Every structure is written in C-alpha cells, then in structure tokens.
Length: 191
Image (cartoon, rainbow, N blue to C red):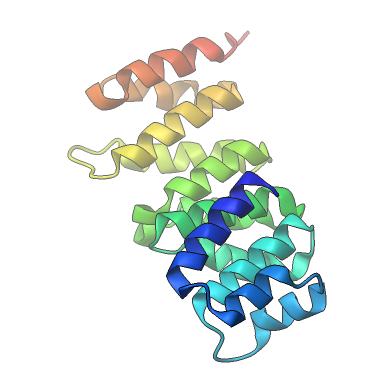
C-alpha cells in the first residue's frame, strides 16, 4: 500500500471509529462505486476524501473537482492528501487550479499545499503563480511566512531566471533571507 494512502486511511479510520461504511469504502475495488460517493448528496466528508484520493491515485479524472476542493480545505492533512493525489492524477487542469488557489488572497492561509503542488508539477503556471504569491508575502508584518518560504524554496527548485528579482527582494526579509540566498544560487545567471 502506498505510504500516503496508508496515512490517509489511518487518519480516516480514527475519524470514523472504523465504521462498517468506512471499512467497505476502503475495501471496494469498484471505481464506479468510489465515483458515486463523490456525487451522491449527503455523503460525509471523510467518505468523499477517501473516494477522491483513491480515484486520484488510480488516475481517474472524476476525482478532480473533489480533490481541488480538498486542496483548499482548512485542515492541513486533507490539503496534503489532496495535493498528493492531484500530483498523480495526471489531469491537465491541475496546475491551473493550484495556481488559482495559491494566488487567491482571500484563501492565502491555505496556500501552502497549492504552492508545494505547483513546484512538484513544474507546469508553465508554476513560476508565475509562485512569483505572484511571494510578491504579496513581502509586505511588512505579513503573517504567512510559511507560504512565503515555500515560494522561495519552490522558486529555487524550479530554477527559473524570472524569479531572480522577487528572490532578490526577499533577501531583505530576515525570515526568508537564507532561503532566498539558497534559491538564488540555484538559478542560472542570465545572459
């Protein structure tokens, strides 16, 4: 069993008390049954999460919308699981959705996992979204330093020269300075 799936199923087993419905959903091998959980009204969140995660790992694009909703959830473990499944789903809409969530100022408190997903995807949307998100985090007293640091580290990983100006600006922020130095060292010098 995939380690992320094991972690998710253990968390949901505790959340549900190991109910018969939970055990059935964990055991089913029918993708149609899993997809039905995503559309039938009245399903508990844990059931939708488990079904979407399993479908995402299987590359079944019926999970896309549910996984994007979970990626923007207030509960970090749900966000992390959704990001993991979305990275493996292979849906071409994923990068655009992650970029929209990462750059949404009304939901910035939940942007950490979309930022990390963008880095993992290495999609055309990744660098512009990370730059935009980081620029907004460079304001004085911004409370979202973890998001800013994830952007700094992600831009270093992606190594795109377009990130050089915002990373240079991040040098002036003590909480980001070392990360910015490391990220800038990974970006090739422009001609």
